[in-house]
Image 1 (spheres, rainbow, N blue to C red):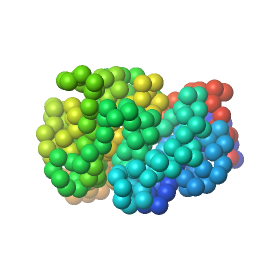
Image 2: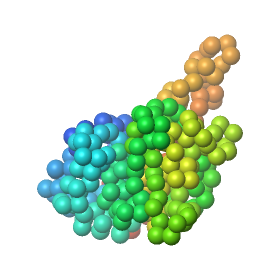
Image 3: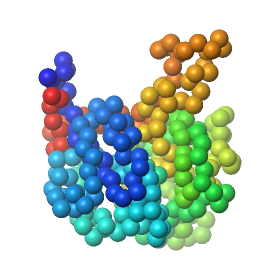
Length: 280
């Protein structure tokens, strides 16, 4: 049955492979955001890449694809390069949205869909030398894109060992382009973060980056892990009397905002992109 507004739902593909372990959460997040979602294995997409012609968004979720045995995201990036790169590039060129989260971020950098694939950037081990798992504060970059409002603040979990984005410019001292900074780590006061508020020591405290046109987003924190109020680590401690918070008192699921921004953007482009289907 069509909903009362007869809205269209963009099709989002969640790509998975051996070792992916955040695909179901990403599917759930995109469904909550209003997308029609299909979870698809990289081998199936490789056999029928024309599926991309129907989609408006492709998500590379987190995990440890192929065990990160060679390097983080390297095997999956190689498979995509060999089997899917032309179709994926066409998808991006026509305005399709791509998000890579954690391991997916690593894959997108290796593919060159985000800055770094040319050798100027890389995802390296956290400076702590250990796996980091905690909630962090983020500030969105000062740029326009489909994913977020410039300067917006977020509180989202991280869980990674190789999350340090390093930039190796042609000229010494050259900073990463400000217009392509998606998120930076901040402390609870909103100031520049030090460890552990910055869990990995990335270049300029960067937690996520954008392609030049803003359609491709890579980020280390996991927005799919905060799409319901109950995901907040302190949601049961919000009432001093210990009572369950009312709906008005519940925390806003900030991770969901990122997915909603993308889906709202695709809805606004009805007719420009295929991959939209009436809600049934």
